[in-house]
Length: 338
Ligand SMILES: Nc1ncnc2c1ncn2[C@@H]1O[C@H](COP(=O)(O)OP(=O)(O)OP(=O)(O)O)[C@@H](O)[C@H]1O
Image (cartoon, rainbow, N blue to C red; front, side, top):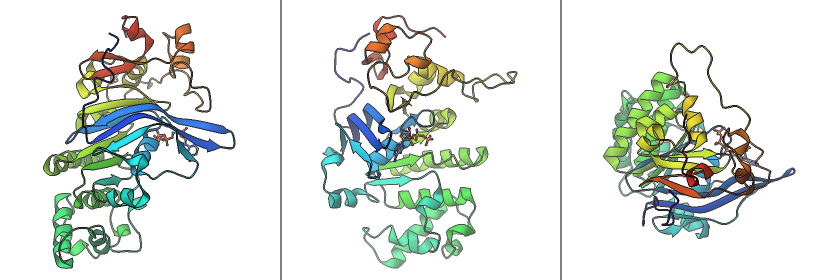
């Protein structure tokens, strides 16, 4: 069960390779250990989901890749290799030239990305500033992309401002803008959280279709397991700053190896029997991220926790070819039965 080969689930040259990433936020109360020893791959042409409860570090991970961190953030070791180049050691200008070109992002709130006082046309033309072609060619590409994301009468709507569109339509416009530059990697940070369930399904289907068409990879951050199952090829489960388990969608949903993943699946409203009147929750609370980094991060909520879980950080154990989890139980070869 214990892996012999270091990180067997990580391929030789993925599009994005995060290795041993730790990130702290300096605060008056001490250092918040927001990311702990995170290693993760996004292979070319694949969609990787990052799932976890609120505060588990999903957005911090996404923003770290984009280089959009606040001043109090400090990466203390780690590497983020994008197309083989370490983003953490790149000059500001080299990194800047990747953003909005090879790397693109969709935010939870579309108004974060859209300028409220500029027309959709001017914003969609501006985003193509590195692309070849005249203004009218860029305008034509914008219309085509708006059509692809399902904006009705795109030619007539170009002169509208963001507030003229509904929330769902604004998110479609953001997707159109993010994909207009044909990025190699699209980072989507909870892009459907602000939308109702019907719109969420539409946006997930849209992302799926466009990803296939453009051939880009997506790092999809979500706390919605159903959306992840629908869209992703691979899933990483985060808890309190750590990736505690990762594998294919099938591995995670049908053969979870970590007690936290099991608990998360048991609490998923999409899987709960209709006769149940109260939604189950995971007992206990997420630990303070200010604390020591020693021991299993999930031990305070785990019914299987032992002394070893207090004293020793679990390494990744291989459950399947492409499937790993950080839990001492796997070392002892007695998988948790639910
Ligand atoms: N600028 C900051 N300074 C101090 N702590 C921060 C800062 N930004 C985030 N954190 C802390 O880092 C941890 C991870 O936060 P993050 O927003 O990445 O979680 P998340 O999983 O994306 O949560 P959500 O689903 O609610 O967006 C949290 O404990 C959060 O309070």
